Length: 571
Image (tube, one colour):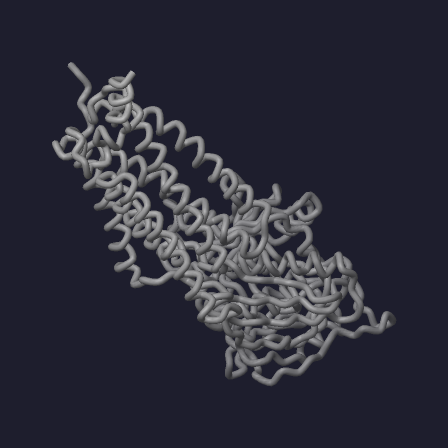
């Protein structure tokens, strides 16, 4: 039985329906325009000022960490530059977003400490928080039945300072875990911010602090006094403390709950990686995966052995403020840990970003200036660029129409389909991965017009060569396609490789150019294979083309056959 020949008309219809489907997705998402870059719409500028004298190498390292931190928050085309040895300037496209501003402003001194007491808890006992009226701490509430039935790698222990979402340190799959436990949910403490640091005089240095796992059960009197005197600011406001890794720390979490912490047991530099843990088949909750280096792994193993099975907490401290204080719910001996619980996607991504890009090599002044900036390109420059791109596109269409005549209509249709599909994908990628369209990105899209036109020219010239050899148009189309396909694949592979290399090794807006160029090249291949080729195959069935009408672009005169015959007769 002969193989079934593909139906070119059906292929074209399916491809057009898939293109229309992208616009249906846009309608469902409610987005119709792409996100624009800083040069096209302006944005927010944050100027970070370093404390003291810093060398250029440290400043460059800080710039790279801040850039990774911003782009880790799904913001593309953010510009992070240094000025002299004093300033790091961050420019974020789009409307001012408070969360991004706070992400940039974080000094990012990341440390891990055990919790000795929380809010009005009694030092030496399980961290607890008193009732807002001042009565004794409330006992832990039993875990809801739904939480009890969850797999053990999704523990549901409540951290100090969070009444809503319980979190816990969990072992990765395959590690031994203990029974679930739940600590009481705290209430915000006093609203007046006053700092009562642990004594800094070496002679008054608290005793026993060098053994945090023992000290947390029996804190020294100086640390307890500092804890009792300290008051937290209102929830949401940063806490003003000095985060000395060699001293106990009295601080607050993000909900305004006061905690007494040990000296730093693990530094942020011991954390190799932190990634968002998406819901899977075994859980519908978000979390964070962490991977420690060798030193951090050994320390974390000792800490997990001491805390597992208890309700004691191991806190993550960023810039002196507790951003998470989970309980330990399993033995973690390989340095691969999880923080799990009732995270939202935004909370999990924010925590993973803070952990992943934790330690800056320099310190910056507090309250850096934040200002809104306008587009770096004037409106007439943008309009001129778009006008030039449209003019080039029209000239390509006009040339192909005059030279290829009837076949030129296929070129025009293919370019319009490619432009339609490109716009929808740019909009969807802006929404899905945060891609922002800049002027270099627009240039990458315009350059791809030439790549697309080259594909048509190679294909059409192959067809005409086959017809000069005496083949009919349907036969010439398929024979020419085999020869043109390999040539176009090779050319597009070179363009795609160039785009990938630029995207990987370039920085700033050049990445936008590379991304747009690569996207357009892939779209060119899709249009060439699933629209242009089947369209020409379908047109070959019509008498207008296969009989070589004068306006088809495939007449004997257009192919040069008339001139050849005349020259042969004269000879």
